Image 1 (cartoon, rainbow, N blue to C red):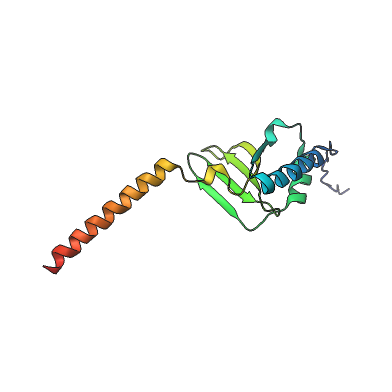
Image 2: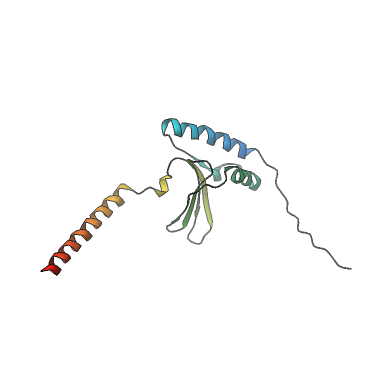
Length: 141
């Protein structure tokens, strides 16, 4: 007798959290457009199951911007199909999932250049330009 193995996937019923998060996002997206006020939702802090997250991912979709920030551990950042709603996932150095956020903003804070870094870059660029100008001056002589 041959046995037939049929894989079975147990699907958890939705808790309704995806709809609650979508409602919150819509309110904060409107507020962002009117006032510039940003908002962050920590998905790890919510009682969402896998079905809820899948519903949320399906509904929000993925937009045109997809960023991988390479630091100690990678951060995956993408704009959803709704401009101004960004999905951010952080991973450890050994690629284990750490945290997940939805950020309502024009540009997520994590990818903005810090003022100190910008000043250092300006100083370095000026130094390179000055060094290059000196080199070119001496080559012409």
